[in-house]
Image (cartoon, rainbow, N blue to C red; front, top):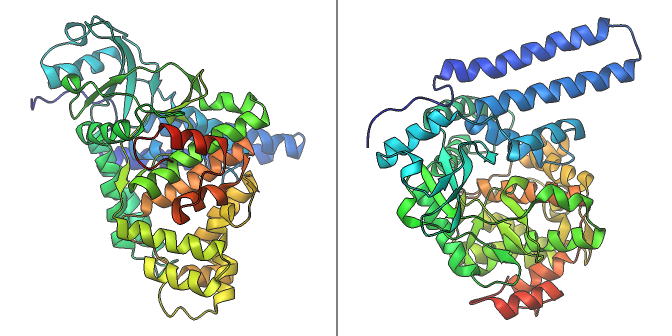
Length: 452
């Protein structure tokens, strides 16, 4: 169907640019008002931070698209943005302003030439979750199965094109601060990854692959796709009941550690065992189930690595664990992270760059907001010796979203202060060691192929 439907988000580049400019203007005026208002300075600063954070979250939520996706990413960058900002941005993980029911109906008419009530026994008019690209409704199929129906916002494709055009300009300008980075290719990698998320048919393909790999697994659940009702703008999948990731923060520390290990094994086990990774690690994509399992919900941003590339990842890890700095440097150069011949000695480069792999450098490490923040800060530093080293670094092709999952997952686990033997887990994957934890043994017993 090619009929044009009403837009749920602003489509024009001018309008997409105006919103963040207006946000910045409001923040400036708020800052002036804060400083001329009488009262305790600390209390005024706290009020300014809260009001600004609320304004940022509201603006990005209204914009949706890539702008909101940025807010979701920042929300898990614990230690990089303030706690006040992160707390407000958490609302973007599942609770963005929804579109009106009539717009939802317009999507179904465009995709199926029928309204939702003709396709489902029951269809909830209002969503139970709304995020950057689409919103999710409860529904019941005619055969009685309970499903979750993801409906893409009308106009979000054009909105994201404009967001990415604006982001491209910023990243190109950023090349002046990081001349070693291949900015045009980086922009193209970002565009390709985000645009792929717009095709729900491709997402369904990815999700079926993960469902096949983890069907019957001890602690990983992947919702099954309902193929006959899924299109490029509508995705229908098994409905899974569970608690949001935020519930983990009220659990005991041992339970938080267990949940963290599941997320860690799913992220890195999928890469090293299956050459796949799901690159959108924000809290809205996880559900905590009553039986102790975790459901992984979103597969819009998935990449696949060849055995050769996975082998290069493994070479970096093996050198790090062996504390062989010379071999580590050679492996990072082979992978394309560090430019060959960078004018720094091995120890200087290692002292700056090792933070990226900090969680696996000791037998047991606790993720903290400070550790997550330092991992990001070192990676984006533009001044001093660290900035000079970064100008001789690059993000290899296809690895933009792998960086996102590394930092995003560190932020999530930092919010739990999760402690674990992450080094031993990774060695299971890269050195063929036997499982080091009870979860590892359960995974090995319930995996159809190589366990995570």
